[in-house]
Length: 234
Image 1 (cartoon, one colour):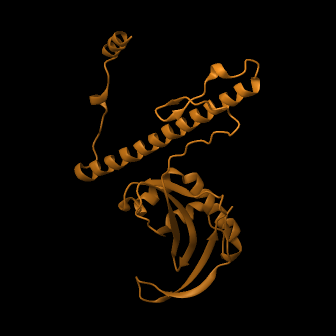
Image 2 (image 1 turned 120 degrees about the vertical axis):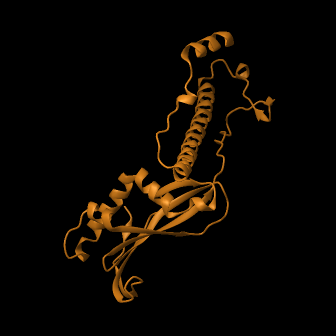
């Protein structure tokens, strides 16, 4: 659970009315291991309030839990109880961070302060960019790796392992499991990135041509033709 600091009080100029209004600022501290929201940015324009809004809607459970924790931790400062639904109706957002201009990047989002100015409830978000890197699992030092190289990758020669060495076989199985797990992570990441790209293209299409029914009929396969193709391949 993040820490919500005691609010600080100040007077600020309301840009709408030009009058000085009271402002209460709650600073928020997250531990390093505490999660926020995240998305993949392919270009600078992806880092915007629209993307932030999509992230909140995609993980609305996390967001509502965050608001609930804020209301519980700060209840003594308010004149009456408020609900998550009430805050969601009036909340506005801002987003700031250090843009590294390194794309594609993972963008991590966390709310760093909440400001209440008159009737406005403003959540200030900070983003941190982390360049996307390929993660290859480490090979344990005590796993016997023989000098067999295929396409630059060393392979294990199972025939040279001791026949009764159950421990060595288990280690080989663990290595295969680690490799398969990494492949699964890459497939899931590619699927998430593809879905993100599809949503972006759909949004561009709707902005250009308006909302209309879109079907996948052009991409449907004929089952009989598919079966014949599989038989030929076999």
